[in-house]
Image (cartoon, rainbow, N blue to C red):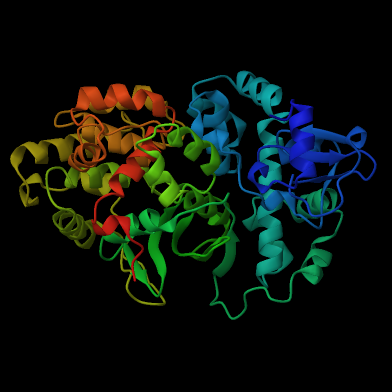
Length: 490
């Protein structure tokens, strides 16, 4: 979008927050860059130039606006809508792969050479993987500076910097302030009284956001010991690269309140990225709802409760296992099966607030489970053991870098995997916004009540007009039922 100057200028003049994260405005006369909704008086069009990423602005010598804080805007929805090289690379960078494995590790995961990855990102985003990761480190550092009392040296290494000097230089270059000056300027109403290792922050999103099905689904399917709904917040344990974490997510009208307790602060960037992915916070609800409203039978559902998101996951392998446990059983039975595995094979954690007791078992731990101890039909035991063995040995990868179509085909080749299981994993674990469940009983019942075709083949043909947002159409169709997944818990 950043190449469409006229459209960008209109968005800046109208201070349209829907475009935050889509592009960034660099002001030639001041040397700063802003989000489109920056509250200051817009500069003259001749003094504006537009970039596709904050990293590109920084690389061009612009510093972040102190008023609108463009580095904290929602991420571009493109990276969760597309499955090409650039989108897959951006999802991996957000997950901290460059900080942990370097650019060669990023390229290896994508199956391309380092040169190809750098060239593609530079062409589309105006910055290479190192610059993009650097911008992310700067944002993490600012968050830690403003919301914690950690010493600056600890913040430098927690944010992923190799030295305190690099940390200081980067913060000054990006924000035109030293780390200590940033801390001095931090808002006085910042969260206080957190326990050691606990951070409180706000996760922004593009409005509207309907929390009912999003948090309702997570709460209704919560696995005891791993997840819970408490005091208006969804809480769960997280398995992270450097340790474990516990997160509490609370819906608010203009943000999601996020409280993180981390065993290792180096996991902050990854934890935030996974929480945003879980709640689908980088989605563009206006684009989704406008497309679905074009169908006169769907339009009333969209108008009644716009802004539905797809509830996703913080751990793709975990969700795939839970999808198999939930085959042909009720939600309660699926939770019971999962809770037994958690108690027997999950790693215990200490929850200061009580309620959460374990991490969901790793695929390596599940691969050693005796199938005879599983209270399920023999055919589903085979499905379970085959899935976890493929996940454990790496022959099946469900990470954020995977190709959606290819991975779906690999899933369908496993015994016991039909279209419903493969598609629900594609929708909620892989993040495919166009995944569709025409064989789902709830979808077929909703289709019949609305006057849509109810047979899978006919419904799939009708749903072609909803592409590429069929996963969101699933949420609106599910919402016609009175199942607990559709309601925000009291």
